Structures are given as structure tokens and as C-alpha cells.
Length: 360
Image (cartoon, rainbow, N blue to C red; front, top):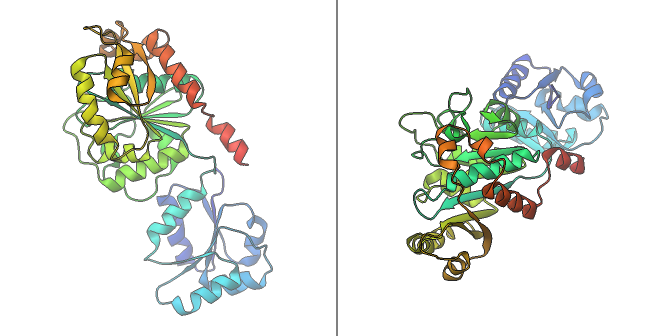
């Protein structure tokens, strides 16, 4: 396990307290009980936590000036803390216990490579049963099939569970119920490891039964971790989005509005598009055929005056595949698979590993 943080202190109680915070952030930290002991590992970890008790020793040891050094003090040390921070080469000061949450976030951030940010897509249907969940899942499967580390998020607590489409409902792993009261920064590696997964496609859905309310802090924490730890985040957003849906729309780079080629669905999409623009800036239209009354995709685009993200024909195999949890097999070919491949090609996404190498 990579060393994320080095704790430098001669105070056993402070060392134990900071190790406890590292455990809460789910990161690896080690203790150096003095400046000389810290010297060998000084340049390795992303974060150095220097106790106020050894700050003067660190300052006089001639250690290399570097970013990521934080001076950790106790209560009532404000008068001396900034002088000690300057002498020890620290860029930040954290006073315990007031700044515990800040330190947990800093520790979690230290374990994560600066690999860039994921692209986030939201998918919304203009009417019930439009197929937004199917489109979101198919996009996720197509992206994972291209080697993209992808997260599919179910933002609809009353949608029946998007994990059912992939046959993952019995798989162990984290659901929204486990994150409902989460505050602060989520560790991305832990998130990836604990979610139910289908290949490179991770899925965050709901447990069976009555949904639990998810706090706005928890939704923000999840999407913050998602964009740091994946190549692509796809969110199935209901027409009445709630806190999770609104957080997703605010995060989204692109929101796809899926409209069946029907007059009523098109009229509904007009009002929904106006509502979506209050939360997200880039709304693109996806038209799904066939049209029972002969309404063309061009006519729908013209009526709604939205940028077009293309169209596709509904695949008759999909309803049975969804009921059997076999959407993965059904999406390997057909009009929906071809459409999703085209969308991903237009987005020109890069795998996470490539972004990590580019940032190094």
C-alpha cells in the first residue's frame, strides 16, 4: 500500500490521534518520531503532518522545502502556530480537534493521484418509460467495453434499481443506503472497490424496500469522489430529480434528454428542457424511434430547438433482456450499441491510466 502521509511528532498521543484520522480516511500513514527519523521518507508521501512539538527541530534539520506540509497544533496554540509553520516550511495549519474533518479530507486527497477529472453525463427521459435507464446503462456498458473506468449512478429512488438490468441485485457492495449520511471526502479507491461491478462498470443503486433520504452533503461527496476516481460518470436522473438528481445535473458536462418520437413526449420535453437548464448548462436531444405516427427525428429537433445528439431505433430484444438481467449481452450489438459507440467516439474520452501517466 502506498504511503500517503508521514506523521512527524514525538508526542505519542498526537501520533495516535492522527493515525486514527488516517484510518477514517482509509489511507496509509506512518509515524516518524523526530526530524532525523523523518528525513529518509520526507520527499515520498503527498502529505506531511508535523506536530507543533517537533516544528523547531524540523526547521533546524535543513529538510528540503516541499509542498504538502501541514503543521498540527492543539487548542490554544494560535499565537505560536503561524511562526512555527513558517519556520517548518508548512503551507497550512490545522488545530485539533476543530480541524479533524479538514485533516481527514486532506489525508484522503493525499492517497489519490492527480489524474484529471471524469466526464459526467446525465440522462433524463421526457416521459415515464422513455428508456432513459436503458440508455444510461447501455452507455456505461459501451464505455466499460472500451476500457474506460465507468460509474453508473441510479438517481431515482423509486425506479426499481438500475442494478437489476445487469443482474447485480444480489451482489454485495455499497448502495445509496450506505452513503445516505456521509459527510466529507470519500476515498475514490475505496469507492471503486466496494461498489457492485460488471467488468469496468461500477454501479451505485438502491437496496430493495423503501428508499432512505440521502442528504445533500452525501450526494455532493459521492459526485466529488466519482469525478476524481473514474473516467466517465453516467447518472440516470428522474424527471423530478430530487437532491441527488440536482447534484448530478450541476456536475454534468452534458445532459442527454431522451425523447421518443411522439407528439406528447415532445411537448413534455419542451417544459422539461426549461427545468433542466436551471441546473445544467449543456442539454442535448436524443430521439428514439420508431415513431408510431410518423414523427421524424428532424421534426422533434426542430420543435424543441435543442442541440441534437442523434437518434436510434428501439431494440425489440431489450424488454426481455431487462427482465432477465441480461442487458449486457443484449447491448453487445444492435442499434443502441451502435449509437452509444458513436456518442463515446464524439466525447473522445481517455482511460484513467492514460490520464495518470500524462499528469506524471
